[in-house]
Image (cartoon, rainbow, N blue to C red; front, side):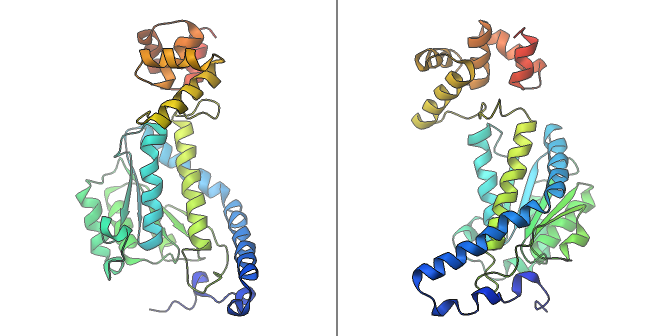
Length: 300
């Protein structure tokens, strides 16, 4: 295994003597390097948009989005996947994160798991991955065997395969339909890809899932109108969303939400159009879940 050519393994000349700096100087140097992450992401926005379009097409047609990675990459995929159901009201199996070594690897490294292509393949098989789904392989180095195994299996099923890497000319790029290649430069601590590479990955995963959810009609204006009000905080958020979207008072918003089990979308239509929950749900079905289109169909 030769890692010397990888961008993620290079030494950063700007932090070569970071161990000699004061605490404030260390913090400043890390922060300076972090600024490179947004720049790296901005350079590949067209590729990210192409990937978001592919993901939307699959999820809209009933397929699932899979993230697959090892270590930090796997944890970030699971983080993004786990936040989609409460934020956007999607089923828990719509966005799925897989990590080499399984759930226990979230808190403790599972030695050798990332070195097995067969394990990546097996994890997809266990979740009945098929041609309707889509896979995003995530690895800062672009060479993780576990991820490559999953990518190759996904390709065998006929599903689209995307790659998210932080080095140029990666092995994973040769196994993907589209590669998102965000290269923020060498890490402050050589090879510590939980830093800038991880930040780039987090930013891109947020962009992908948020863009897809917007296109699916999970957002009205900039409001998360499919939020699941599963606790008191989220119930208050639902009230605020309906009040903001309809211009009514919070007490009026709470009253209409009570009528539709705290579902924001029908509540907004009920408040703005003066219709019943049944009528609101019919408009939403015809509008494919998009509040704006449902309002227009309702004459507003």
